[in-house]
Picture 1: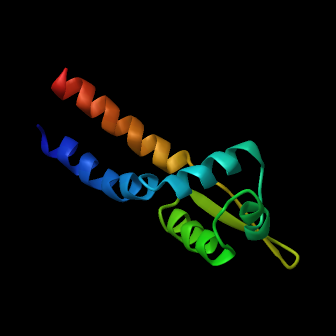
Picture 2 (picture 1 turned 180 degrees about the vertical axis):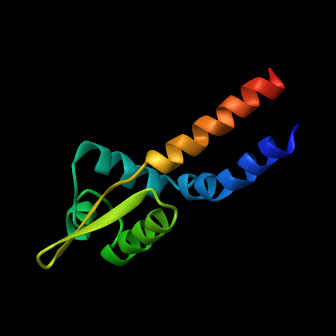
Length: 100
């Protein structure tokens, strides 16, 4: 496998780790159904506590999968998947070219 393919695999590790948690998957799916939600609104759809939701949102934000928009005193979370999708597309293309 080429150096570029290995670099892409390694670049995807944080993304895969972030997406491996079912609670974070649930948050992503919930945000996909709604344009933007506050922590409290996300908590209403979950069995997790508000601090736990905040923890998962921080991990998603650090991975670039979620962004925050401030509207007045409220912080709204929304999906920001463009970079992650682009990285995964590059990985898939590399694997198809080199492994199939």
